[in-house]
Length: 113
Ligand SMILES: [Zn+2]
Image (cartoon, helix red, strand yellow):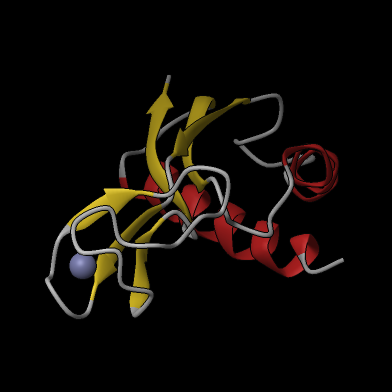
């Protein structure tokens, strides 16, 4: 389960921001989770409750913002949303495409008290 290390670094970021802002507690953590990210929400919640215990982030609400999978064509450079894992370019029909977003997992913002 690679979520454990992912959540560890996520909590570290949150705690650092909370400390910098002298927060007494963290109300909510907004996270960006790409459609194709291998990170799953449920294990993240599970590990978060475990790791954030007895920190200012304990009990914070986790909010996941899903971002769509977007690819760019290497031939014609058009960018398009990937639907049902079809990476064929919608501009020229080419198959030389690369993913430009949709794999991310990051802390977007936190709300503190
Ligand atoms: Zn193309």
